[in-house]
Length: 197
Image (cartoon, rainbow, N blue to C red; front, side, top):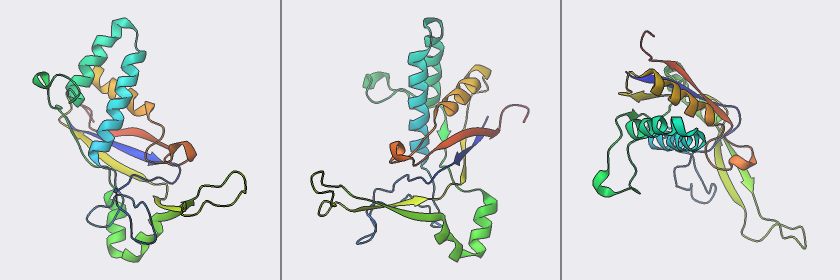
């Protein structure tokens, strides 16, 4: 089955492209072919796998094996393990993107795209003088709080795995850079795809 879910941001956020915008912006956000913000599927998969690993470590001994089976089935075995025992993920994690209704609106009003983005500045302060350190100004592009939608394709029809995926999603409270400075507050919610929905 395919599971659809939503990532709802409650504060500005930045999932980076790894690029700068020349003179003005030091870090730009990842944009799709339409110039709209998105979160790469590999980032989402990594965040969910990290959550599953943390929950596995917190589980009591009777549940650890179930969590390990979930991690290996959904996310595959990592490259840090024995290369001969490497197993690819059984699922595909799509990018998280704006919903079709917003995309359709923005395609007819392209000038409105600019309002999705903000810039934040940060600089180092010299302790003794209280003055900004020379050359320390950094400008980061952020995205306003909004909802993105994504999908986990080929998810096993397994109630225990489905519950564990929900637990992993509930574990994630922040995404992107500068999480410790208030950026990227978010929550995940499953919006469809379970058997019978």
